[in-house]
Length: 383
Image 1: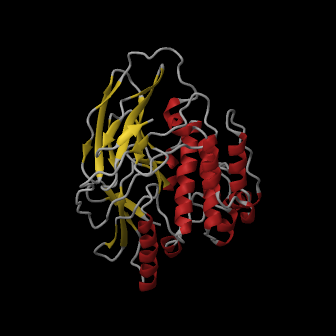
Image 2: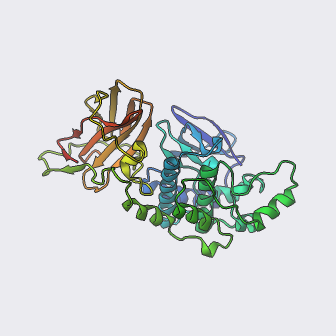
Image 3: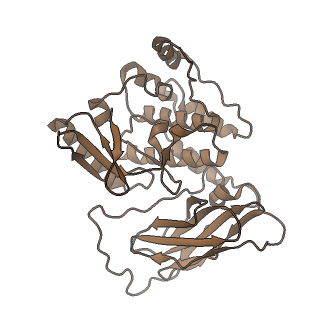
């Protein structure tokens, strides 16, 4: 369908095999305008639609480090829950705007340099103009897509179930059989019931949700899986804090200062918030906090550098840990959780006109540790 090559700076170009006729280009422009208008942090943006000298159409987009297609074993449960929340929210936002993804597959679940998952390659215009081999990622396609190339909101939800099945089991819903004839392979996808998830420790509700999303009857697939993820946030495990950091205090005179925005505008990273009952701290904290007195392990956060449309963070610790940035935005009741993994630096995109509170949280061998809370732009912070 397309090839990917290095673009200018930290971007890639997706190059399609031919030029577009006027009608297709108009439909593509409209599709991308709708997506751009969302400003959704979990939808990988297309920065520019262009053409090569020979007329072939190109899409320029931010470069991501890897995709879910590189998965070689099941993911930890907490990572699966993050994926479920991120993908379902991205799909719901696009569907509300009238855009269908068309191929929710592991290759389109991407990870930024900091580890945040995003959904790329939204839209059906180019998929219909440049159709792929029907056997490509067949095991993740909805039966109706295999039969007649149907692409709609319900096939997107099937794709969500398929990638979550992969993340939980390490296998696609319909396992690949070496040497199988294409016709037999297609017949299995159309008729075979997906094997149930039997992995120990997976909540029954999550097992049932994935199974429902993979129902062969599109009418029986859950219409709003994002709400099922969101509703589970109330089931916080014992010992985890239920209260977010809050940004409080009266507005300040002279704020915000005038900020010149780029042609692309700004967007706010939504982070990875409170997924499937783990709560925001649960993404890095596990199920319990240590009851013993605080250890000498510390996380020292350097003063954040406010660049207007983003904040630059750096920190140090006297222990090896997996880190996350906990970011509270003025006017929001829930914090954002932005994974940093083993990195001790992070750039966070923010709105120039809002105040923020943040801290660094780390998961170490003896428990969970936090830096001090840093206010941004005069915010008053509390937990």
